[in-house]
Image (cartoon, rainbow, N blue to C red):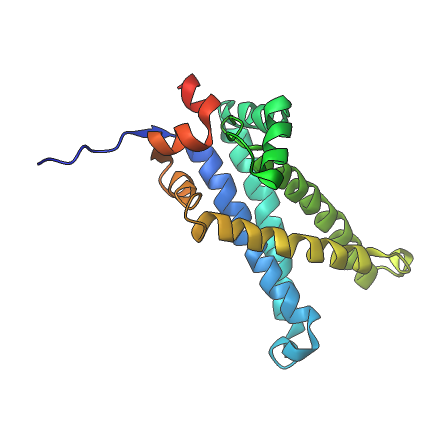
Length: 207
């Protein structure tokens, strides 16, 4: 008996995939090199601090230049994505309450659920904080006029906020049985239609 082949639908565009993986690679590189420079237990590895700082700064520059390149070459799809993430409606608020209570049917979600919208907003804000505080930290080393700020403290606090968010994101994308299929969307661009109907019902109806 032949098995019915699942139907797949396009979830992410090439520009969205490129931007996501640019952020993932550059952020993990900055996190790894930042921890090497920060943790006393890794002092031996961090002996060549100039090298690790160069990699750290290079990853930050690669992220922002790469982002500008991807956004400038996009044909408007990313602006639609930003609009979808920025829109927070009653179903999103009900979805957040449902996550706490787990009572009744799951409120329908669009292409991005409320958790993804909040996570994206926080990560975007953190990248700005990392960039501003990191720039000030660099200027403190080369120009005495910039010394005396709290840039290092702000940079550290942002790191403490970012790490659990990244761990949670990796868990949902790679380990959690009900949501790990979403990783296919970011790797191949498509997801099963039945999965989209279950987790993003409003978006699936629009297809």
